[in-house]
Length: 125
Image (cartoon, rainbow, N blue to C red; front, side, top):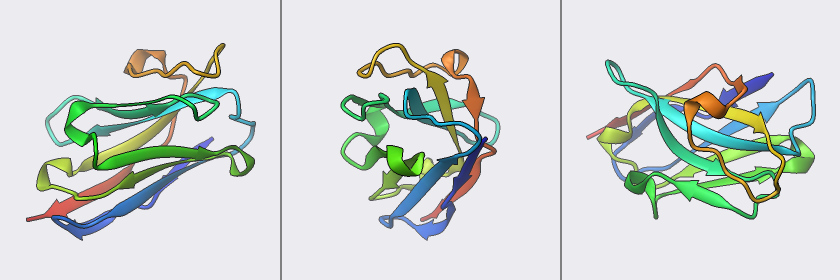
């Protein structure tokens, strides 16, 4: 029900925009987030957004470089990634979970209900 896309190969300093399209239900009252997993490492939190879009939260390593946003009319969440670094290389996953508050963000794997299939991001040095 979540389809992630937009990954690819980019040089360090470049940009990519990931999209996560929801189908089968409306996710307008769901909090959403992006996670990533590099080979041999655990899945880690990257960014989260409340269902209103009014609250966002980022892991320190991407602050100022990544921006999460959503378009409820399109049932889609985005992750704009600028100034990419080789250490950003990973499979990126989007996730969604029902939220009782329009301002609540979720940043733990366990609290998310729905997951996309992942999209590979590779940043060359």
